[in-house]
Image (cartoon, rainbow, N blue to C red; front, side):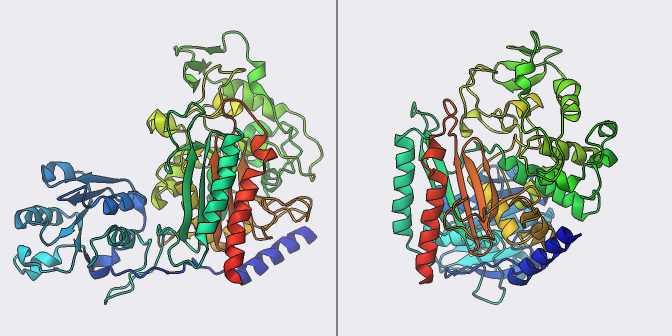
Length: 578
């Protein structure tokens, strides 16, 4: 009873110091104006409802505009040639150019799209906003869902226009004004932070890590007050240096899957009263009823206090014929390139073994992957949907997480995915786009504790959703109290939240950073990844790497790379406060 009261008090205290809405700080002078905005179309809200095409007369000239749009959503780029054929299956058309770029015949095609009930957005660049090529027709102008203008044709002006459409920048000039609702990509301009010194520090740490082979490369991203202040890729996919790392590379997130894949599903189910965290495994799972886990509450599972075995090396139990180098009728579970597992191995062997495994008395903190295997099973039984589909439906697609998901080789080219280990023990092949964790691979690539892949940008979107206490892009996805509950300390024996890891209060720990504070939550990943969210500073820090390449190494930990980079970010923020 006392711990429950303490939990409630901690949440009330957090609510009292954390704003319900996003604490964005508009620092950029945005000269974009919104002349009309039918049905408050802009900024866009749920992106899963939109199929967006951008049309320009010159894709090179408007590359900054196009590329900025593509940071937020899947946006296809076309010219006016074969306009009707290209735009037929899109419900949102963005047309951009200056007065001299857009001919009357081209705009006539665009207006036909409006007649066809598509949302057509006209973006005019430059100081000449004469609409003579529309015949000065108020009727024609009224067919556009929105019209935006920006006098600047520079890259910055184009980027500001694009961000205005999605809510990355608030529109603060003119009659129709908007608020910032999404991440802002302005390179930290006007942030009052010494980003030059911070960049020099981070560059030096990253270079040291690569030279000492802690990882062949890495990606670092930081967001402050809703503005991306740092975003840089270092090194290469492998030590062979054949492909340089890029900011949109996709990484195996390892245990970040726990808080960015499984936990948001559990949060959604809990706040919609589909599950109750104080109900037991036996209540939700028939197979658990006759086991030693029947009476274990889900809350205890999420806190890693259920007494589960920390780790079961399932791949060591494989028998001859279970794994082969080619697919067949009985071997359809692909665990890597040229590696196929016997069908239903997870159902028939792994899940029963977890259910029958020993448990110690509950209450003590013992980190175990079994916890999230359990939560995935509960979620799928309650939703009747595979977790990988459900999380896309309720979260990733609506908020614009374009790369996040499981089984990335089914969705992306192989070279977009950073390879992990040269597996010599189990699959005996380089792992690229197949989950590094052996158990997750044997479960079909989708598990509660691992299997999620994403870019840094997608993690930043998710981090901002959490900083906003459940709101992003003008839409509420979680109640503030749900985010507070899961991310605040919920254990009397450990630092943990529900699913989430947290700042270690021990003064000697320096975890996750020696300059972090008690509001910080997030998670690390075995492959060399982390995301840490700091409500006190409205900060998101993301580090992605493949430190397990070509073989598992402790150098990233020995050199304290992730924490030192986080320290450098904190030093910059603290200096600006003086």
